[in-house]
Image 1 (tube, rainbow, N blue to C red):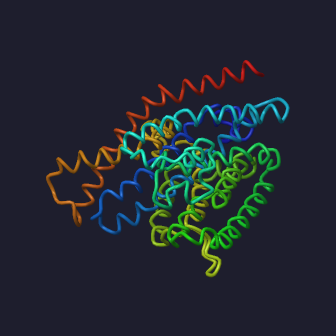
Image 2 (image 1 turned 180 degrees about the horizontal axis):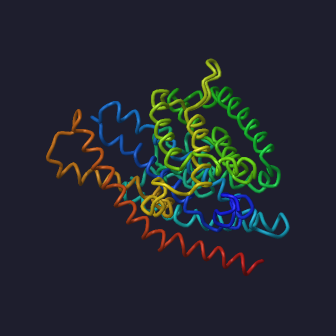
Image 3 (image 1 turned 120 degrees about the vertical axis):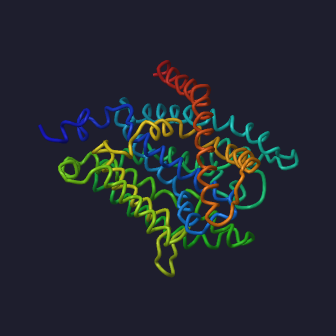
Length: 390
């Protein structure tokens, strides 16, 4: 029996049969840690630059979410049976009841948590968020001043845009070669939109336009294509077997990923493809590094990187993503009121670490509550609806 066959259910043959992978939860756990880390920086104004520069890469935890999402969606799609139209309907129902109920609830949560003035309310913004097309305009995402129904809601909009085209992609991108073609096409889309997007919305400031070009869906199609690539690398018997038989371990891959973070932190935050210089955006570079790291962890699910703390956080990562914006604000207010030391220079590192620990722990506890109270009941409701209709 080969090392590959000793893995649970066999990675290539049985990968799709697995309803749940702890490794995917671990990836999501790291993704939400990155997101919390980058958003914490804004609360520690005197944080020393080397730490701030490194934590700024937490900006790309969202891309790790997208990659993990693409893999799990493909696993679910290939477990599904029936005609294409029926599979599409089942897929969209599952995704709607997985995301929408708590996302909609968060609009009310943040209306009161942020004490939004009634005059800031906008039906246009509300509808854009409710129907998940909010990432297509700088006026519906946090690029220009105004009400934001759900902080971070741009990524939910991008994800749902991907859901709408996912069944067709799953039908067409069926092997490793086709996933490479998908990546190539997505790269052309990224370059074209980075170039031609510069003339969009000339009335807004350059920085706001750069933010929009980062947020909008065409800039992230390539990240989902990397998720397809990761899935088909896992499913490829030759490649997966060579990795399983190799000397590399999950710990080594994780150490290499940490080193990569350090190196790319010097590259800086580049939000879209610079056509004149040929420099790729940072989210693409880092996401391309996420793929081999995730591949090794999935094929060799052992080591320090996969532990109960990180998988538990990953399990409730959607709730954590929605809630952490509010938790950051309240945690900072609390810590600021009791902090007995300075918050400048080297002392700022201690404050940042304490701030992150409090935020992560509180977010984890609250997310467990909303996961059980809101997320899971609606997921089961969606499943019952599918069972009754199909």
